[in-house]
Length: 499
Ligand SMILES: Cc1cc2nc3c(=O)[nH]c(=O)nc-3n(C[C@H](O)[C@H](O)[C@H](O)COP(=O)(O)OP(=O)(O)OC[C@H]3O[C@@H](n4cnc5c(N)ncnc54)[C@H](O)[C@@H]3O)c2cc1C
Image 1: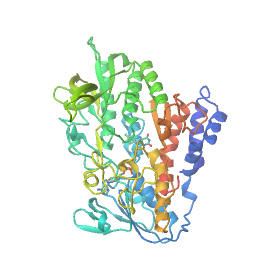
Image 2: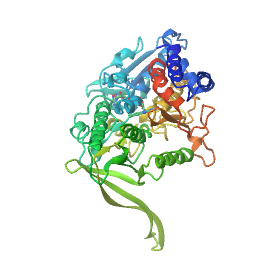
Image 3: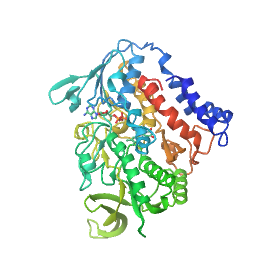
Image 4: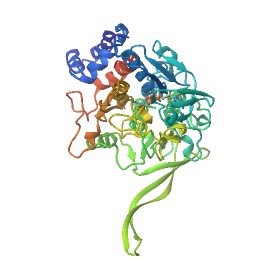
C-alpha cells in the first residue's frame, strides 16, 4: 500500500465526520507528529530499492522470524553488502499483525485482515530454516534446530518472542510460543463456554463469537442479578500490557451498541495496584473506568478456573509487616506477601495468560533467572555474557517495552550495533525505553500512551509524546491512526527494515 492511499483512506473517513474534525485539522496532526509522519512515510516502501553499502562480513543467525526477527533481518540485509543472514522460524504465519487481534476479537476486522505469510516477507538473499531452535550453545557459537541440525554463527540475534503460559493457571492448559501454532491444548478450554483470550489468533476469533453470545444472553436476561463479565491481568511482564483493558473497553462498546450494557456487570481484576505504570495514564484510565461504570479490584491474580461451574479463583494479595529475628536473635520487621483465595462466578471471562520466555531460552546460558528473559544491556541490547549475542522484542530482558512500538525502535539499535561490532567497533547505538501503546477505549477512540524509561521518574509526566495533543485524552484521530496506518506501517515498513 502506498503512502497516499493510507492518507486518502484516513481523510475520506474524516470527511464523513466533519462534526468531529476538519480535513485541515487532521492533516495538521498527521504531518506535525513525528510518529504519524514516519508511519505515513514508511508505509510507502514499495517504491524504495535497497542500496546496501556497509562492507562487514560474518554469518548472522536470527532465531525467531516474527516482527523483531524479520525486521532486523531486512534492515541488516538493506545495510550490509553480500550479507550472510539466516532466519530460523517454525510458524508459516509468523509475521501476522498481532496488534490487530483486539480488532478481530471485537468484530471490526476478520482473521484474514491480520494474517501474513512468513515466506512472503523473507527478504531476497536471506536463508530461512523452517524449524525451531531446541538448544543454544553460545560458548561454541552454535544453535541446534529441531534437535538434530547444528547451525553456527558469528553474530546471533534472539527474537523468539514470549511464551503464553496458560497452563500456569489450574484448570487451563497449553503453552503457546507463536501466534498460530501449538495452541490445541489451550483451545480445549479457552475459546468456548464464555472463556476467552485474545492473545493467540484462534482465541481472538473465538472471542468475537463469545462477545456476541454475551450480547444475546444479555438481551434474554430477565434475572435481578446482572450477568458477570470479568477481565484479568496476571502477574509479571506482558506483551502489550494495554490489551487486557482494550478488550474490556471493546466488549463494553458492543454491549452498549446492543442496548444491553445495564444487564452486565463488568469487572477488571489486575494483579497490580494501579491501572498503568505511569501516573498520568493511570489517572486517565481510572476516570474512563468510572465513566463506563466498570468495577475493579487491584492485587488479584488469577490462579484457577473451574470451567464446569464457571468459577475463577484469584489470589488476593497484600504486603504486611511481620516481625522476624535476625541472626543475633534481635527482632527485625520485614514486609511479606500474604494472600487469600477469592472465588468469582463468571458468565464471560477474558483471560490474559501469565507470560515468560520460551523454555529453550530460559534454560540456556543466555536466559535470566525466573521468567528467563535474555539478559542484555538494556540500552545496547547486547548480551551481558556473550558479546556476539543480541536480543530484542518480547524475549529481551529489559524493563517495559514488550510491544511492536518498542520493536520499531529496538531493531534499528540492534542493527547499528551488530554492524559496529562486526566492523571492530564498540556498540554505541542506545535504546531509551520508548514504546507506544494505543489503548482502544471504544469503537472510534484511542488514548495513545507513549512513554519511555524516563517517564517513570516522578514529575516527568508524559514526556515521550509525539503529537501536540494531550496524550491522556481519548481521540478519534488516534483511532484512525490505529485502524488505517499502523498495520501498513508495520507490514510494509518495519518488515522491509525501513520504518
Ligand atoms: C492481543 C495483542 C495486542 C497487541 N497490541 C499491540 C499494540 O497495539 N501495539 C503494539 O505495538 N504491540 C502490540 N502487541 C504486541 C506485539 O505484537 C509484540 O510485542 C510483537 O509482536 C513482538 O515481536 P517479537 O518479534 O518479539 O515476537 P513475535 O512477533 O511473537 O515473534 C516471535 C517469533 O519467534 C518464533 N519462535 C519462538 N520460539 C522459537 C524457537 N525456539 N525457534 C525459532 N523460532 C521461535 C515464534 O514462532 C514467533 O514467530 C500486541 C500483542 C497481542 C498478542
